[in-house]
Image 1: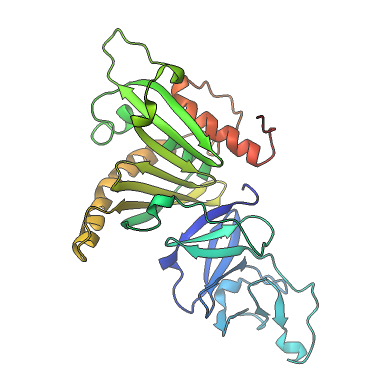
Image 2: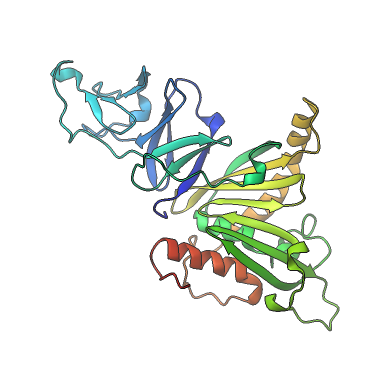
Length: 327
């Protein structure tokens, strides 16, 4: 994972009431729970005493109780009570597990992959979707590393081959550009795919005029993507890393053209079959890619149309400190 970034890992609705939930995310087994004030606890799902899964325990007020010997944990991962020693006994600092800073916002649970901060950076969700839109969606697991799943949504070359009966209709096989721009850790890429008349050759990104009027998509590092279909309709996906070979993808249809209560929920619900069809067409191919995890250098023969993928790999490698950042 990239250090010091917010990763979306769960939908809010998966964390229910006064009940802890155990999940595998970021290559770790984690346990999450809500406190009485609504804040989120997220710590390693392994008791520091005898290794029992803390997710099998229960909540007592805001503390998580280990089901094996009753050790009580707070959201910083510290043990604050060892029942066998007595309530009045002090607890050594060595009795603790790793804790993540966690926040609930925009209908997702986000975790910070760095040290605790009193004033952590803002959750990097798309500004225009923070209010005014309603949404519906689904989640599913793909058998690939999250980098492969993300790259599929940056791939503008595959559309006429993988999505022949959906978003790839029209046989637009020539890929002009695409034009890729970064603003801090957010990529915007502009798409101009056209049919092949047998005479045309794909244009370079520098040859595309008025590119900002074109259809565009965005990737917010480290794991959030949106398809900007129109001012009133967006598709958003959060690629939650499970482990080296699995990713939980949360797909949402956002819209603001229907505002009538009841009807807007129906519209959002009706989007799911079509979105599942598109994503399942992708999944069928992406699950076959070797290796299941992408890297900055991996022996592939990329083409100009792969520019968003190459740019993503480069940015990820820079954020991980694997390659230098050049101005």
